[in-house]
Length: 380
Image 1 (cartoon, rainbow, N blue to C red):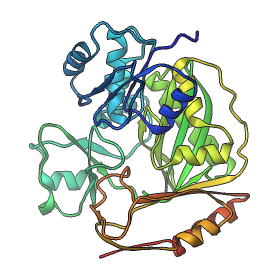
Image 2 (cartoon, rainbow, N blue to C red):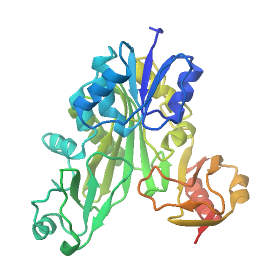
Image 3 (spheres, rainbow, N blue to C red):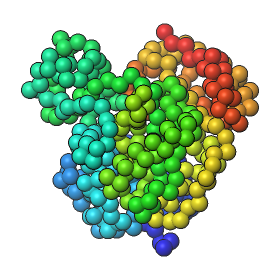
């Protein structure tokens, strides 16, 4: 089948580039008017509602009489709207229940707990909770996160019962803090089968991702097995997943899973490490097409996500040094002196990025250290 009509909810640059390169007609539903489809296609700017009824109402209002063969969610907030819109607009169907479980962290953990997936202790945040009982159950510090968010938006660490302000409206989740290295597992899925898996190590949490991770054979088997169990339990039939784990001494603990491509420029690093375009692969999985995946990486890549913290940019130093490094594949600085940086409320906020590739894991680590030492974004 090649007569596609695609609706993209929550567009991502890489996906839009591939759709355009293949001349596939596509319409957009986005929260901000960032991307432009062709003049013959529809462009809707509207919220990604969390309520199923509001989503259905938005679809009826924005896409009356439209039919699409495929609806693709590119962002976390778009997963549930896409699952619901597929039924209204005649597209390839997915499970709305799976969409909810991959969007709501509390529902996700409650559901996967029934399958014996190992995870940290948690509870729903509510106004009825007693702070002393919360700390007795979860320890110190407590991690509070929004149930329906991504990239660490709204993440809080609460260290004392007197600092705990009970939540309301069931918007947040409370978790026991885990002091352990973290990793993620990216999978491409077609017809209920995992076609390709990459493991990413968070070398510096929130800033540096190593792709692929350097793990022994037993660690890799354990992580892949956990990933398979989660994907099977959630009954994910197709698309791309991004599963985050804590690498504790007792074994991996499930963090959360997203049914969409990862951020943090991980897709860029996957392309260099594995020598294929992951956006082309993602589109193929969404369209139900064949795709040839590699069996081994060709190099050791990394993405360095830059954010100096809140303040006014004074200077950016070391750009020429970074550009002189042979392993640097992509490099962009988004700020200049005088720009004001807000505090980083989510991992999607950055001042630029570097993607680099090396022949060995040791060379990758050394290049990472040189880049971090040379590239300085000074703030005041």
